[in-house]
Amino acid sequence: MAKNSLFAVLLRSPWWISIGLVAAIALAARALLPAPYVVFGVIGGFPFLVIGLMVAWRQLRAPSPVRLAEALQAAGTMAWRDFSSAVEQGFARQGYAVTRLNSPAAEFQLDKAGHSTLVSCKRWKAASHGLEPLRDLVAAQAAQGAQHSIYLSLGSVTDNARRFAQTQGIVLLSENELAQLIVD
Image 1 (spheres, rainbow, N blue to C red):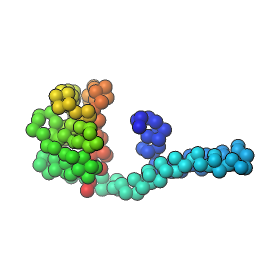
Image 2 (image 1 turned 60 degrees about the horizontal axis):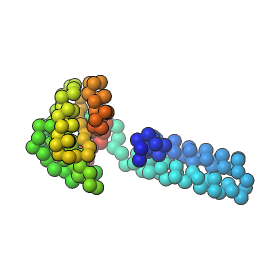
Image 3 (image 1 turned 90 degrees about the vertical axis):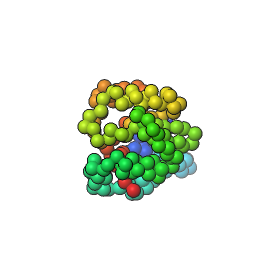
Image 4 (image 1 turned 120 degrees about the horizontal axis):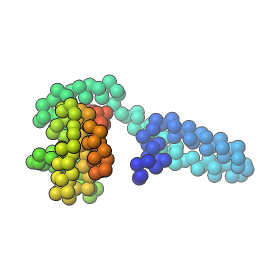
């Protein structure tokens, strides 16, 4: 699914937006279509109903903001061994086969559905991240033949590094995404 497609945007939005679209489609169908065809117009809103229910389910099961803040605070005080174990377990919960790597550029290789992803997180406590670790990750990705790469940290990424990551297809995990990953 394209990152900015209507359904992808709705999957990232609050549940009530999709449900609101369903209501708008139903009202438009009622107002604009002849009576025998209203039901077909209303059925046009069904995909949005499904998206709304999926998002509502995800949001219901998501950890609270307080719990995420506690997880971030805990991550900042963890030793590398504990942090790497939490990250490994988080990716395993998402269905990835996780392999630890002995590489300065990437700590994990994730495999799922025939796709390989390298994860770099060793410098998770650094206050700011520049281009160098991202360049190393891209080189490791090419050397390993991985299709994707992820860089995660608690600190900020410089603007140059952010642009580089975007052009190279590196996913930068934000603090919120990192907290959701390590919350059990």
